[in-house]
Length: 153
Image (tube, rainbow, N blue to C red):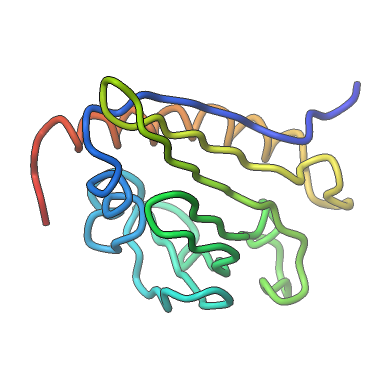
């Protein structure tokens, strides 16, 4: 069986692009729909730390792209973070890219996570792919609900 290399999700969100950008890039807003960002150095090359309840914490990442109100991308470890003696600096990662476009009903968000097919063993790449495939839909549903709530942090 050939492992898919990428997950792609699109969703029309009921908010202007600036509002979606803030929900995607501001730590206090990410916490409302994705996971708590315990630390973020908001610059290309800057570190980002995610935490979730009942999960291995913190979960590190590195910001790759910042194009205000258009594109945000970061790399993060793919599953191997739970292996002993493995750090983000030495472990394989996938790239998460979020792009935003104007849409008649608000903002079209496209999320792509890629790099699963190139993950070396002993990383269970298929398991990581399946978990993230379902997880991203759940997260985007949470983002949609957060934006509909008009809650601004």
